[in-house]
Length: 385
Length: 141
Ligand SMILES: [Zn+2]
Image (cartoon, rainbow over all chains, first blue to last red; front, side):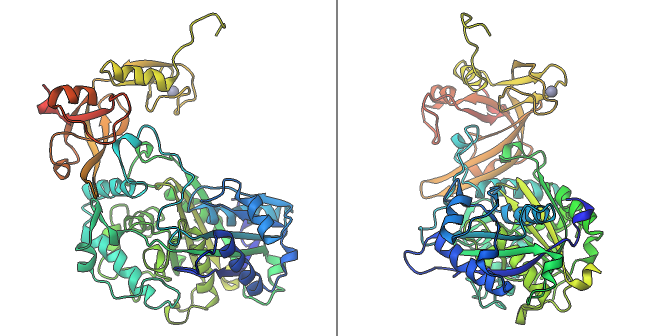
């Protein structure tokens, strides 16, 4: 993403579908339908104006066409890039570029999944890697567990520090009526829960829920004439260094170092300028790695940074203010929800969990097994000027 | 390649042929000397097609480890950094799964060797019984 895209596009509508455990028989496309109608209403834009569609699915390898048909949209620009959970942050950057180039003017980014109603099985078009599958890793959990083991070995990161990531997420979720898990959670609860792939317990892992989301994106010029308050895209970056965990060059260093650097360069900002951070927390190690790699703390200091309420309400940095994948919800792929929450924080729509005066928000998507990293920086009109 | 020449084995099949002979094979790039694994046609470092087969010493160091726990018990999954310069997923056989530690020195053998050595058949096996696994280096017979 080049400097010229700074502030050129804005998110003008966001919405979730029904969340958690949805009514029996609802499909992932039904949830996309709900989220689309709600996001367009939020934007004050008619469905007939949508001319760009961006989506990725765990169910359908050619999801963009199925989704266009279901929604009754005839897009002149389709983007079905599927890089796992990071897809939707990537779609936001792609949409801004497409709008800037005139390929479309009103972009709709959507996702839906009924993973919980499907029985909790991870629906995935992914084929196991033949050089990993014989050893029986539990995909994707064991891959993150391997990265965790290495981070602990190199930097002394502890299970207690990781547990505090889950505890912080729960504390935020208790402020969010839409979150799926809102019961109190302590460090001891996490440490004492069932170990699945050492050193990660079931409470170090994201939830399995149903859910969908939608984003409406248009040009900054048009955004100023709409009813909703725009969240301007200030910068973004994508980076992918591997697909399978055995080919990740350094398990303690993710491509977020590159995606983040590019996003900050485009935006002309530094981590110190960010008021609220939404990170893809599939596992408790993720925020530790991403906070380091995005520059919020030094490499190896993520554990102390997140410990003892560091990223909880009232801590040093508000992270995953909706409760994250760990407590808000995780319907197969979570990336779109990082953007939805970032936009709501910038609009001041977050009630009890609102970060006062949030002007700049970071949304970070992760795909595969720490494979694809996409960072977006969003800001209010005030941050743009 | 001319049609009347015997076809070369694909990278994947050449690797498997090695395992069936008790060898752990990897590729070495001629121009840039990169050790390449898993096998492929192009060097992921420099893009060259000039890759040649090497037999690994089979000695390496555990880089990362986890214990996968399920209804059927627990098993170990590791990433091993081979001294030859490549990394692979595998498991360490012998110690209890949770006793495998980062930094442990390990040595390659195949599951066919393992069956000969101790008569059991670990889970997650490929059809021909030739999966590359590791044992603690001092335990090698
Ligand atoms: Zn090379």
